Image 1 (spheres, helix red, strand yellow):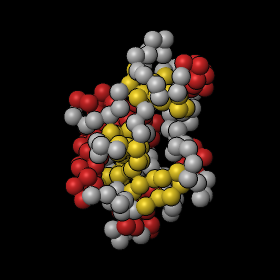
Image 2: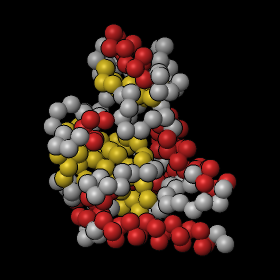
Image 3: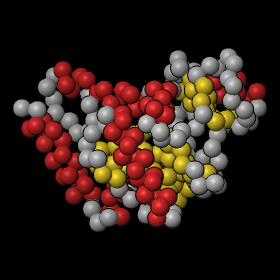
Length: 227
């Protein structure tokens, strides 16, 4: 996005500043906490992590669950850190939240219906995200109306706090006690017909061509407003 800006090239989605903040999981989690959006406890100190097991190890600046590992003991922790380090010098160790996983798309400050992602096996890793048949996706998610509404409110608040515009997608975990935890923000959500954001749009009657057209129109308005 910064390269496009420097060269006067128009594009859809958020600017480089919001994307930079959202990509850094450590910074984005601090911003979420500052705006009273609950997120899993975490540490950036891989030498003396204060979190108990089980936990999750991930590169602080990667996407698509690359380099992510679930950890149950000290030996696994050391291996997980070695797995993550080639992807990023900064490694995040996070409290593992047991629960259901959801996502909420936000278009121009408005939340789309909540979608649930339920992997057939394991967690929502790279394979389960992109291999057909690996995950059951339900939209609208089977949730109490109040829970869905609060999750949507958190999604909009998180996007606003990070300075994300046009469109984005926020990922959440819901534990057995009904507490909602914001996992991370996606500044360039997948845009195939079967990706999560298009499925959410379809759930409220917006087909794929209409969604693409809307995102283009919103983006053009951003540029027109800056003239």
